[in-house]
Image 1 (cartoon, rainbow, N blue to C red):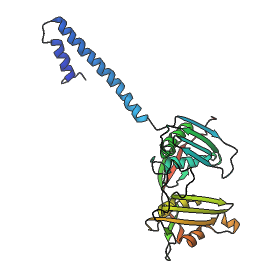
Image 2: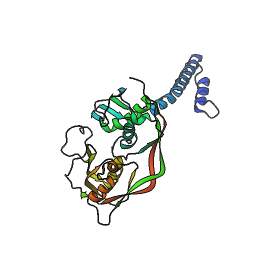
Image 3: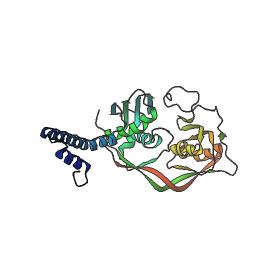
Image 4: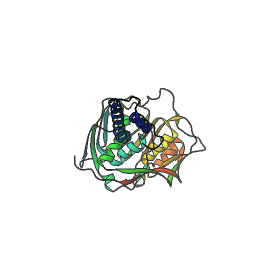
Length: 303
C-alpha cells in the first residue's frame, strides 16, 4: 500500500515536506494524514466482514418449532398456511424436501417435478413431524415453502443435500395411435392457484386434486401441461419417475380413476386406467433423471 508509486505515499511525503515553513502547520498536516490512514485501515479490516455477512445472509423464519409426532395415521398429513405463517402436521420429511428443493426451489413457481431422494436413513419415511414457523406477515407462501424451508431443514435436521442427473428406470408417457382422450383446457375452466389463499375453499383452482376411498383413487388435473401430468400426477402414484414423450402441447383437464394395489385386489390398475381413460400409455424405459442425494441428515432434537 505504501510502496513506490503509491498515491497515499506521495500524499504523506507531501505532508511531511509541507509548503509552509511553519513547524506547527507541518505537524497538523502529518496528523491529518495519519488519521486518514487509520480510517482507511479500519475500513479495510471491516470490509471483508461486510462482504461475508452479505453472502451468508439467508431467508429464514423468525420463530420455528419442530416436534416428532408418533400418533399419526397413514393419511393424516395436513398443511395450513397463511401469509407469514406455515403449519404442517404429521408431515414426512421427504415431502418437506420435495417442496424446498423441487416444487418451490426457485422461491416462486411451485411447479417442479417430484424427485427421487437417495441416501436417506430409514427413519426419514417412518417418522412424522409437526412443524410451525412464522415469518414477516407479508412473506409469500412460495418463499416460505422454498428458500426459508431449506434454511429450516439445514439448521434443525443438519441436512446436507445436492442434485445429480442419473440414467435410471422410468416410465415413458406416450400417445396412442387412436389419439388422446384428454380434454383441452379452456380459459375459465379453473382459476390460477393463489398460494396466499390455497387453503381456503375454492370452486376450482388449476392444478391437481386427489381423493381416495379405501383402495379406490380419483386423481384430477385442471389446466396442466402433459409434463406436469407426467411428473406430478402420475409419478406421484408410481415407483419411478415419469417422462413425457407424448409430444402433446398445451394444457389439459384429466380425470383418472384406478385402484391402489390392484394386483392384490383385482381392481383396475393405473396402467390400464391411463390407457382407457386418457388415451395415453405408460411404458417402462430408461432416461436421464434429476435426483436429490442426501449427504448428511440427523433426527432433530426435541423442541
